[in-house]
Image 1 (tube, one colour):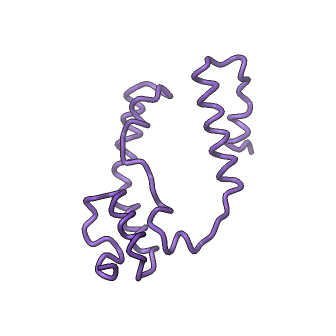
Image 2 (cartoon, helix red, strand yellow):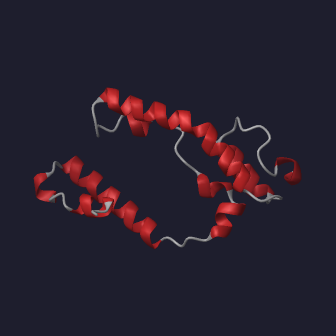
Length: 122
């Protein structure tokens, strides 16, 4: 079974455009960073920033990784999954949270009413 990292490494840089080389290096660096990133379960239970993800559709729309219609479908699927993801995040976080963590979580999604720990941090 070929891993995603192995698939990315299989692209020969010389056969790629300058932009594609840059994208390849970014993907590989991200995967290698994730590979060696400490996996501390406490962060997933206590820090909303652990779950930060892009709300901006530009990563799906402006990057030319697939035809525009396919990119838009990918973004729509991502957007539809967000409410479930937010509920899962809320259920994972253990209260009370430090005020700074709550404020950071609120800055990620300013519309998040009733963010976990909001009352505890007041």
